[in-house]
Image 1 (cartoon, rainbow, N blue to C red):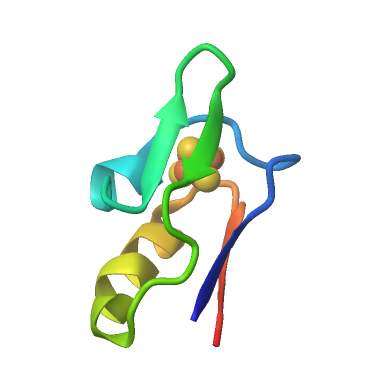
Image 2: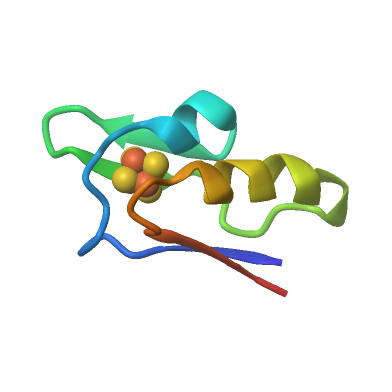
Length: 64
Ligand code: SF4
């Protein structure tokens, strides 16, 4: 499983960080997300998926 963040779409809204701050961190000055770990273990799939789904501008995708 791989997390991909499209930084051209990200608006730094922070929903992903609110849902999973172990995987996403938002730089408030740059208003961009940093993916802290882009290869989560299978056991975290539901947790990460919820954060990906929470992004209002669809900047996050999860690939198998
Ligand atoms: S929720 Fe989406 S727009 Fe907001 S910081 Fe995360 S990736 Fe960026």
